[in-house]
Length: 360
Image (tube, rainbow, N blue to C red):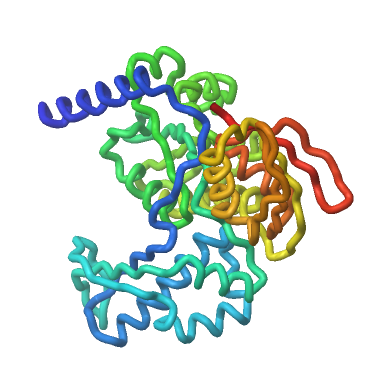
């Protein structure tokens, strides 16, 4: 118990120091393992490798497209039949997980498969499915849960299996979660009943120090021999959206919560295959180095198919972008990154006109 208390104290101290020295800025978080799949398999045979590669490809396609309905596409169904031709690297790791294999419980191996982003993007375009880039909003999570008739807030140092399951399911959908540290600052701003009751104004105030893009809050009633009940809400669309459910297992409820959040965020950030042009002016580009950085930035944005410089003058540059998806999605993705601030958004004869200012 002393070691647990000491570890929690260290975590709180480190987090508090980071929050004081490095105030959070509202920026997207790059999801590092977007194109890495992890699948549990019973052995290293070629049969299980193929089965694992099929599950792994489906996992990555759901994560990158933001859609759970990938297998409604005939293109994807055909691709899954030859899934072993899509990964470029794989390896095995030991695991403590147990799975059923030929009627017996077997200690599983973790199969890791790596996929080339351009190959996945090309497949999704052929299937006419959207593409959600690796820069994704970080989600602040306030979850109140009941255990032994007592209510708690799920914090970063919690030993609850709920924390592990939420992080695992969020990783499956390509979402990064941030949990409160519940130090004196947090507990002075919000209480367990306020999270349980989903007092959104209080939750927003308590979240300010973390500066998240999205806030997810909910409550989970999960007592032994009773159905798991939950209610949750998030502000991903600028206003609070709610959902609720009742299942026999808390894990199913949490999975549904994360899946619905991911579906909603994908509808906002994932870009479709429809192409168009956008004219962008960036103010504050004072030298060639800054121009190179901005040019590279545009070319690396997931909706941008091509980027060309139209004109470069004193303190500004004009770019012609060919994009996939809607211009508003590009605007939202750029806002999420925090590198440029939007000054003006207006229609134009050759596509929308966007004027940005380069942030210092």
